Length: 276
Image 1 (cartoon, rainbow, N blue to C red):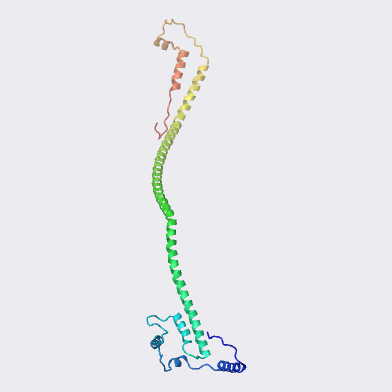
Image 2 (cartoon, rainbow, N blue to C red):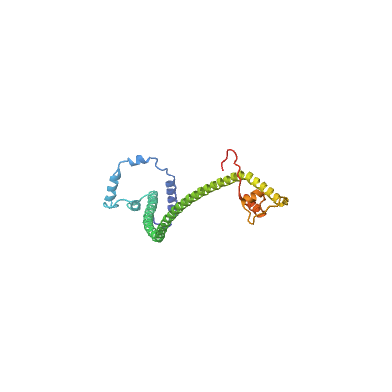
């Protein structure tokens, strides 16, 4: 910066005040940037600008120009020749400070970006390693559990197939047993039908036999009639011819024996169209 000066006399202060007022009220050059760049001089482009800065020892030929370096060049320009108008010096210094600030901000951003990338890479590698180390036992446990589940599933599948096969066999056995029971029931039903038919056929004969037995019992319960015949000599042991000739009725024991034989006999009266 320009060093401060000692207080001057009133006349000098009035002159400085007039000069300052004149500088602040002087209008800025209205030439465009293109017209200014086209003005004749030693510097007309980038190549001539680098050569000029090198010739006046404001730049080293083997080093590139960075924004921070250019800010330093502007500060050096303010000290190249005296006197430089105060407005020009202040303008150059203002541009230099702004350029330096932008350069510093860009450098800080680049450094922060590089640092963040390096830190991210380092943290990523560490995080990946830590995550792998942390989940490795769980992965092994999951793999072991999966193998155990696979074995259990295979065993369950085999057991299911065995149960299905046994169920099918039992179903077939039950079907066979049901068929056998059905055949037995049919046979029993046919036997019952045959017995029923036989009973229907035997009913008239049984009724007739019962009637004969009732008649016989009635006859036996009545007293025998007394028959008077001429007395004839009866041999000590009667013969069949003598009995027939004498017309002697059979004894009570013989009549009971004949009734018993008849009771045990079954007289069948076959119905037309049916066989015994």
